[in-house]
Length: 556
Image 1 (spheres, helix red, strand yellow):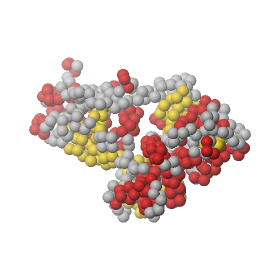
Image 2 (tube, one colour; image 1 turned 90 degrees about the vertical axis):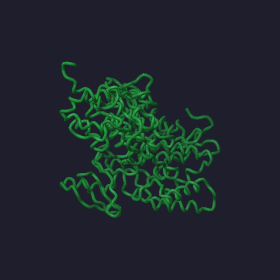
Image 3 (tube, rainbow, N blue to C red; image 1 turned 60 degrees about the horizontal axis):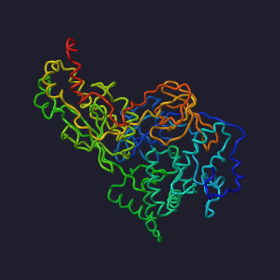
Image 4 (cartoon, one colour; image 1 turned 180 degrees about the vertical axis):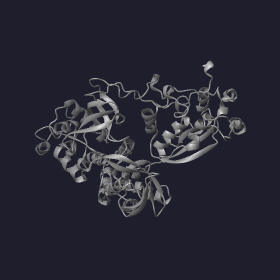
């Protein structure tokens, strides 16, 4: 229904968007190369990843390459890319990307043109796009009305930044510019939350920031979004804003960026190219959090004194936790029979022997909790616990790779295996059990939230939320078919003006909005009473469980 106070106007030009019949295309994927930069995986320029893949096919493993005027050394054995001038190395990986012919990258002018075609006149003669007119002017013939309504509903909610009905031109351009860059969902949410606060004080600040980016950005062959700024170009934009005679909010924002750069605290890499969402993230105060691995000796020093009984010496029997210094307070994530998040220093393990700095992450607390619930909870619980492959240190390793792309040291991960291979471990098992067998998690720390089984009801015809890549922006689609851990999802694409078919792993689905036919029994996440993040596992740490494996058969 049209929103009150909005007067419809002629939309004859919008009819040019309609097509004579429903069309559907299937998006194909190509192999590409991504680099770990600024806490996220980013697609390398097309010319660079194409060259790397060509060299790989020629069985080359180490070679030099030039990208955007910078010399790099690529090592496919260690999967690293090193800038020759600075010597800085970053991890790379092979991934998949939608083929260029399927790209719908549009410019700011295209966004504005379509807005003016479908907008209606609101109060004060301001042009606005309402949910109703977006439904009526959706391009193409759409037979699936339920899918269209769900798609438009989510799109409209995501577009709104002001506490008013109707999307204005700045909100419309902002939404599509963000989607063109396909940032992580957390970045999308963080940027929008900060913008909502700004536009309450200055309704035009977003428009001015858009114009600053648009006028300074260059067209580069990078990922889905080709408009980008270098660090130096960002600084030039900020200087021009600071020097402007009229006092505005963005002058303060730009001054903060320049001050952070001067103090060496600007969260931008030297060779990073900033897309629209990156630019806003920096201007609005992008924050990066320090990540540590806290290392505990679960024997409280006894391993150093008595491990010779095992036939070798161990400084400690290690338990690790991952500490993230979030803006709203630090949290320690650890696995001790359940997955917990606690205030650092309040776990049952006492004081850590070492607090090892592992790097930075831009991920929020909510995003980390969601990742654990969606990707780790089903691995680290009572039924799947294994002292060699799924203990507390393996949990830390998985989480650290997600946050910083760094592993737990091999000597910690392999320690249970080394102990298991020692014949003497059976001889001293009673002694070790007296030390460690009564180890408990202690009082329950604040548990992380574990999402419910959000994919209950997955099957053909189900309406779902999905992301094209891990942690990416949410879209609405309808499941066409399911086969094992993969499914075909069809979604409405505004710019392609048709249905788009994608072959996705079920991990890319985030929620079933309407159940389908022939429901599939997917074990995505265990459900807990009260929805708490307490995923049951074996009490204590890995060593008591490992020793239990050596219990004589007669006593079992």
